[in-house]
Image (cartoon, rainbow, N blue to C red; front, side, top):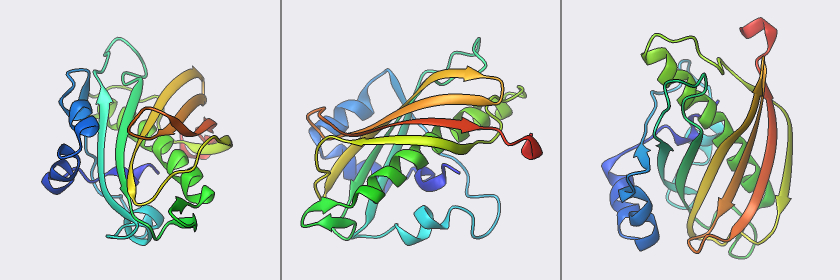
Length: 193
């Protein structure tokens, strides 16, 4: 879960560093680049890591997160992911399919959980969240996601209660206009705790 955004490479940096609004975000002292290891078992997360990866689909990915607050059980409150998309993700001409946009927001919320879990585990801390599955997600489409292009996905933690946490995510263009937004409720399945 959340591994679509596992690749942080010099190629991705060079792709986004040439776009002024992306370069400003990358150089911001408020955000830190992040990367995660490959999926733990073969075939896991293949929808994003294999099927949707390519020069005409997901071209480049650059994930960042806010400075962790070690005093919190959920130390990283916000992640941001720069995503370059091609024109083979379309539902209409030069417009990404709505299902793709929803899948991106769901995957980004999963990435937020993975980033927090792995940050805690590297420091020998009990991890909240441990693992999560989407229980519900409400998606609102406000404007078309134009392709090819670059978008910014932002995920924030709204609330955590026991095995449940509520996240919000947005997909924005370079001017800051929100194109798609989602609210998700995720849960730690009892069998996986």
